[in-house]
View 1 (tube, one colour):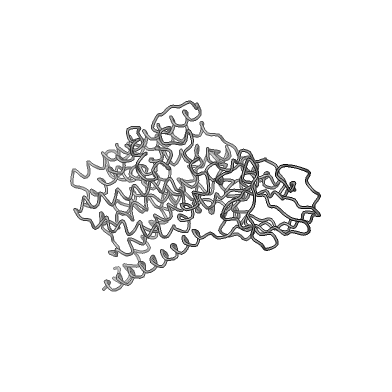
View 2: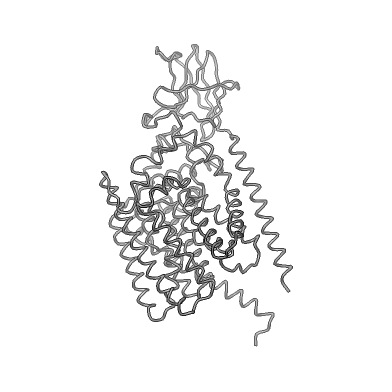
Length: 575
């Protein structure tokens, strides 16, 4: 006979065993997702080069002792850009970190396995809260290999969005607990807020478009909870959780928002990248764009149809009274999320994309598949609880996933030379292409040369003349500091292979100076006199970065206080 003292230990062991099984199922599914990588190489989707370049640049700066990079040194062929200020840090930091433990050629595959394993675990956490273990395990596998995840892995290579999508089931679960739409088993409002804020902040620190989708989705959850409970309390709780989540991510969000005025951020919505160009089955003048949009739209339809079928199966159990009250609430909430996402992917919702704050920066309406995948995985798990349709549903899911993967594997570009080519370009002091939206204001990075000396002597006058003889010695040249000593018997100007940006502080012989610009771009030019002149250029901390870090520190202290208060409350409530 088992004693009462042994029972909690056995329950803990059983719980740990469940999570280990979920880890194994999620990792096994993730490995199946990247199975074609083993014989075809890396899938080189639309954004592969951008992410691989960011990983390389960040890893190089870590070797220079710069833990938190802000300036992307090798972008724009060595002239740089402030990419790391505007692009959320978790994905490029994870990619850079992986490069220290596995070969560069294996980094993309390892990244995908980590992200999709995390996706399965988060989906298991949501499903296991309401469903039996085996059903929740099936839901975890469904989410780790859902059709949209396959589209991202094979054709888009948007590693940051992949990481953000992995966390979405956790955001939904913690949001439901925070607003009280489902029972919070910890019976601690403060802890519920803390866990929601952590998950929400992690999404914002992974991918901005996915974070906008997540923000609107949880706002809908809180509003629906207020209607269900006929109370304003879910809205106030939700507002508190959102505020804390934004506070935790402020070290990234505040500089990214404030410094948009210093770059050509509007280029993110250039022709072909606007919502109007990417509604379901929208055709334009670009054949390649049309092919991809048709594929993405077809994946949307498949995902919505599969979700609808699974939801009907789950509804039948609800109508038969076999579901708990929490499950019924979750069924309704997930169906509302699906309906909202489906509407926003059609052209009829174009007015919403024009007027809802920041929604247009999602760019591609089909990105709302990211939130549809959460109900798809949960309803798929719930459908497995019906004995009569279990094997039929399993076969349908398998056919849908394998069929989608087969089409995408054939349509994508497979190339393992992308990362070696980037490495060679950096080794040759040439760097890689820049990004339109991160180009400093006043610059046209298309005018920058692909191969340029780090320091170039120019005539003293802009009008022309001969460039005087000068001795140039580069004393230090890192991503965030450039020190150059110039000796000349005549006045001259020196062009640095560096784009001007307000965070750069320039000194000549320890005296602050304002640099000049080239005629067709923002290349930094410094005027010098005769004799020995020492140019020092440092990337300094601007006030917006200091403010963002201070808000994040306050958010962390608030988070710790909430966790501590929740722990004390639980201890005082225990017998």
